[in-house]
Image 1 (cartoon, rainbow, N blue to C red):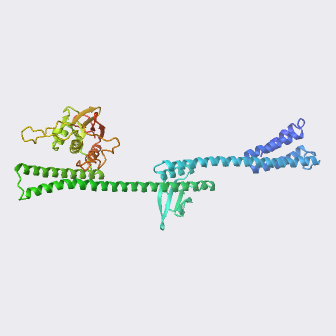
Image 2 (cartoon, rainbow, N blue to C red):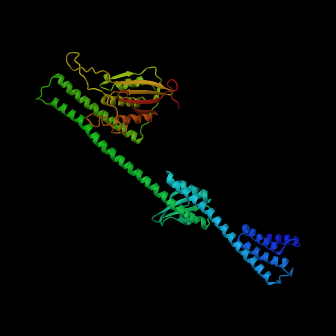
Image 3 (cartoon, rainbow, N blue to C red):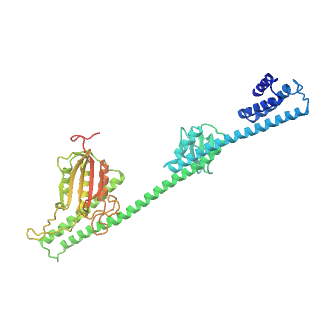
Length: 468
């Protein structure tokens, strides 16, 4: 408001050198400057004050509010009108600029909230944290009414509100869902933005619940598929050895059937082999159940691959098919001896069943025509690579089809299209046990055809000491 007085002082100093029009322009400029700085009210007051000072000091008769001529009246009125119009225009421009800046800020905030909802796997807590940061409140919560009570669906900050009536800012999203803020009251303009934010919170809540429902539905579908596969596979693999056992026992007990000692021995061997298959099936099912429930707790210590391979081969009937090339000088590995033995036995057993290039040949060596002398078709090799020690089980069978499913998934078998026995859990159990010991297991193509399974475990750092 000092600018009209400044214009008056300058006009009085330069009265002998400046015309009346110059003084008029000076007062109009002062009004414009006041409008830019102070807004509409100060600008209008400056216009009236400037008109009075112009009339008192620069309009004849001087030092009087009387106006001598009509032209001076017109000039003073024009001065007031111009000052008022300029003040209105400048004030409107400032308001529009402020609104535009606020709109840009709100658009940026809403874009950030939308991006959070669309890209964050758990969007609701992140969205509420952003609301607290942007609006300067202490806590924020999304409340949902269930019956007569309000339940906090999500909340951030210290002591988030549990009832909309206790909130400093309550934004209804729907009749049963509210956004509640605690910390300070917000102006009406901010609350309008919060209504849009509340809509984003509703979208985040629905997205979160849809994701949970989708995950539950997927889990249910996978469980149903797994159960169906289990019933189908186990039903077949239980029935086959049981049928063999029943047929063999029936033949042995039939008093009318004359059996030689060799035939009786063969039937007894069939019973034993079928019982072994049942025992292996039950073991794999139990191990798969332990893995699914997280009940596998490895007892880690330093072991040697050659010891593990020897123990694993002792339980394989056709071990003459396996050629072992595992150096005793290989570094020790950190593993659970029992679990690693099961892993190696399952992988070698899988290779014996599925990885043979040709059918078993019977060569008459002792004259009875029943001695099998198949050449070794499965190779077991060990090697060290840095801080890892690998065991490779190599076969030269059919290998994996180009678009085959994961060979380590439960109920996946290389012999799914033929009568090859096995429920398809062996490699799945091997993978679970290996990963439980901190190792990895992978399947590769064997050069020339076939499948190579690579078991990799960390090498023991020194001697038989295990790091804690």
